[in-house]
Amino acid sequence: MRRIFEILGSSLNLTWQEFKSHKIRTLLSLSGVAFGIFCIIAVLAAVNSLEYAVQKDIKALGTNTVYIDKWEYADGGNDYPWWKYVKRPDPSYDEMVMLKKKVPGAANVAFNISTTNTLEVGDNSISGVNYYGITDEFSNIQPIEIQMGRYLQQSDFDYGANVFVIGYEVAVNLFGNAEKAVGQLVKMKEGKRGLVVGLIKKQGKSIVGGWEYDNSILMPVNFMRQMVRERYSSPIIMVQGKETVPMAQLKDELAGAMRSIRKLKPTQENDFSLNDIDAFSSFASDIFGNINKGGWAIAALSLVVGMFGVANIMFVTVRERTSQIGLKKAIGAKSSTILTEFLLESAFLCIMGGLLGVFGVFLLTLISSAVGFTVFIAPSILALAIGICIVVGVLAGIIPASIAARMNPVEAIRSK
Image 1 (tube, rainbow, N blue to C red):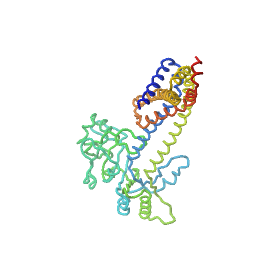
Image 2 (image 1 turned 90 degrees about the vertical axis):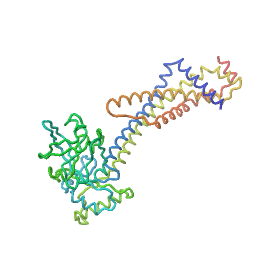
Image 3 (image 1 turned 180 degrees about the vertical axis):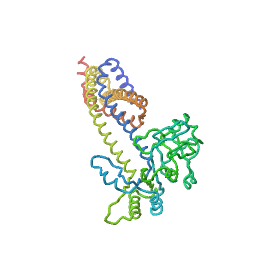
Image 4 (image 1 turned 60 degrees about the vertical axis):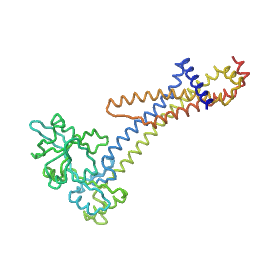
């Protein structure tokens, strides 16, 4: 063990001496490794951070959840048959009630309608506020954090009470201080007035869209139906399956129940869409996986260039130390020891290049935080980068190290 530490210390010292003696040459040679490691860490960290944010937003739509709508949540390209979907009937509150009785695999079934309008308090008003009319099981599918006050109670849903919980940005824009919102009476659509009973915790922007509560208010659906017509308010039925029920089984049950409710004949196609939220998560994972592959391709090319640069340094180093190698072998140093020392030196050089790449990524994370998107570097990515540096270093140094290990001590000493 002591001998191993001596070899490590000697290799590290020689690497440092090489760097101090030829700073410009070493830095230029290490630039390829540094750029390759920068690409690997930057791409993996950025993609992982973005995927985490996207998957978090997708999960916020509801895990193991199906959205029943007349629209298919697919890529709206040129082939998207909107003309077929627009003719379909909208989901209704009554259908939601019947689904609760007909679908044994459902844990929670909720109904939602939405629109955009104004809110007024005295002379102060704001426009573009999202109104959401929801049923009691909505919060079981879409967890909502209340910062102050309370959430909607069962009695509010049962009687369609004129109460609502308010988003953080709406509260700030209306009252200046969000914490003043709870307990205030606010004028809504069609001259209706509602009491603010709760303040929703600040959420932030969603990357994939969906539910953004900061600029929203949530109220019982029966109260909102007094202000808007249900069919013109983007009605949606949300169904969350039980944990033991596979998504395929849940969709089969829903398809059968909806066809039964709408009395569709066996020859008629579905006039509704079952949009699987979990499928979006898999689709997003595939996209980010392909982006990772592109990053690896760029990094591999840079690492190959860097490998040749390190190999060039090692060839020059072996030539400059030929007489030293001869002396070491003459006093008893084994060929394996010489080989190990040069391989370790090559690996240390690549690690130095990798550290330059890590420093570049660290600067990138600071810039990303300043623009509002936080990139985090997982420890596993750093460990992977160090491992790659060691492998690249060994591959780059194997030939010059082998040449040094096979030198004849007498001829090596005379070369000076």
